Image (cartoon, rainbow, N blue to C red; front, side):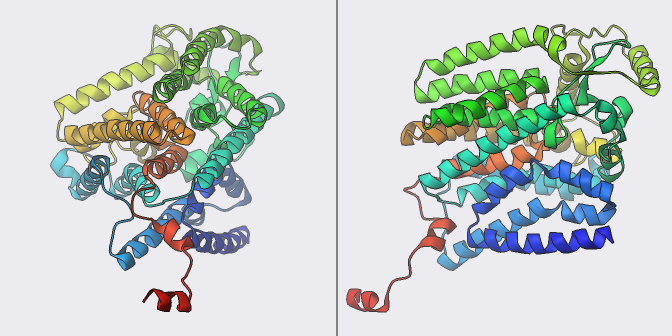
Length: 493
């Protein structure tokens, strides 16, 4: 019964959304900003209600369907007008080359490369690697007004503040025992296929382990059900808001809430990426204050390591958790639960994974094929050849060529965004450049595009920002173009 009702409601909403996106493809970006943020929370609620398996998978495909509808509208307009909706540039050629390599590696038999991924893993990896490409080219195909860009920015900042508020309420008002009993645990394990061993079966990064049997520290996960995904959205929103010079009285409280939420995610890499983004913002806008803000961000990050343990909500491990902790300690001797130590488990895990991934790429330059790295391999039980870093993951799957193309696209897109920001002098272009710079930094030690919000939203917005107004009008301009009157046509003829 619940599944039938859910599918009926979903079908109606999806049909309405598809029509709205077909009329104005830019609406897909608004839907992703809000919808992808609550994607996992809604998925867990539906799982709790009894909607599971293929039915829930179909419902969660809404974001891919909207992307396909938007691209279909763009393509149909291009075919009808017999011209591309944007003027191709080097960055577009690199993006297309990277996407082509992804598709080629999806077709190469795993046996020929030494990989062990099955067809399901290959399919997941194909989607994982191509979503940023598709979202980027969608953005490139949309020529929108500056008022529309302001609307996107406001939606992003307000949504991020709302995510932060929900997360802050959660860490203090909702007990960790409630989370252990919630549908989040079986949703991640049984529906998505993740093998988590955190407290009560939750993801390990739900909490920060201070070592031994001491009470752990709660981290803000909000509706993303992930501290890292939440932190990435907040970093993007803060950098866009930092470039937004208007309505400071409204922006200030929104940014304050978002900043508080970012601190409580206790994602030190996100704070460093925020500082890097502010430096890029200062360079692009030729202003001094972003450099001061970047220095202040680094200082806060260092201080927060000492302050957070004294004010963070805490929780206690269950007996089963303690047994798991002892097994982990035995397997990883010498770990120091000091956030500033290089032997701290999280820091050491990132460094070890990055080093091992680089070695894999060097010693196996042809790659192992799609599905043999990162989250995809973890979800499907495939031996993981590389993890954490997008650069090494691409190399492990598609060899040195794939890794170089991914890195080249990231650098080319960053430079192109910076050029557009300096040329147009538009604040949003500067903010998106800073946000993308932060993502490039984060991708060194984490799977940035493994967070769907970043893959859909940031890459689409980057594409929109890069499309200049002096280029050929895209589908948005065509959809809005007035139909000439018959008498006016005759007069001109």
